[in-house]
Image (cartoon, rainbow, N blue to C red):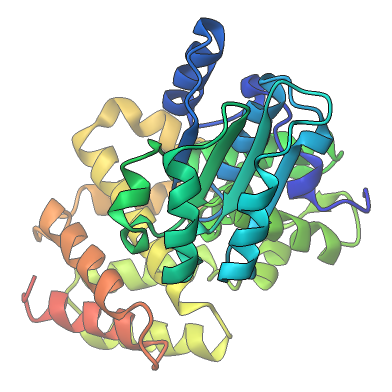
Length: 345
């Protein structure tokens, strides 16, 4: 294993390596080809979606040498003095490039006075300066700053994209990783390349050899065994609250991550819906499953109680959104079981 973290080691170095952000890359490449580069960009997206990586790639494609690319973390450098130092520096010419690029990460963390001070420079920057702002919370940014930028929204990568990335990097590291294991890591990564590769890093550090077992992934991520997920869903199908609650507390005793448990319940339930209503997708869905999981999925796809419906999945999503950070970890799964068994969905 390299001493570099996997995320740093496999950070995209050019636009063709950027995954899942084609809508952003195509516009930026077009601007470069046409010479229509703006003076300020705002990259919006959740953590680990590639905002800073794309900002660096864009800067290099502008022909900027490393000494003409400046990065500032606004979360820790958010005062007026920090911004004053920046605004004073923008007037000096680049060392060896046509442009100087300033990348401001978490720009929404600037204090109000710092944001006002920065706005003056953003309104009329020198011709040799380009600002690339990045934020995970655009609602906290003053509209006066947003309106002066070209705004790009970075999408959260799908579980399918993250799974492919995990499998690809595992191969490059000489690791044997089962597709289902990669899927669990992708789900646990929650739409973040950085978090997903951080989890893969932990799994590789935990493993004693080059073959990663399901047990190792479960121990590192806190994921429940598929049998527990299946038992819980079976309880939902039967509208058997007691069965579900027993499974939940069995999982809690086994130190399972309850938030991840609920995500895997939703994931498996969705697979059941797809197998039932889109049978042409069955082969692809079942390709990563064990034989017992295939049998279970086909069984719930045929259930006659009306549980396997979009309204149940909506109920799951609502419970996840409303209670996933509850101070009692088991509460979301308990509430879901009680809602379904009492037909509140």
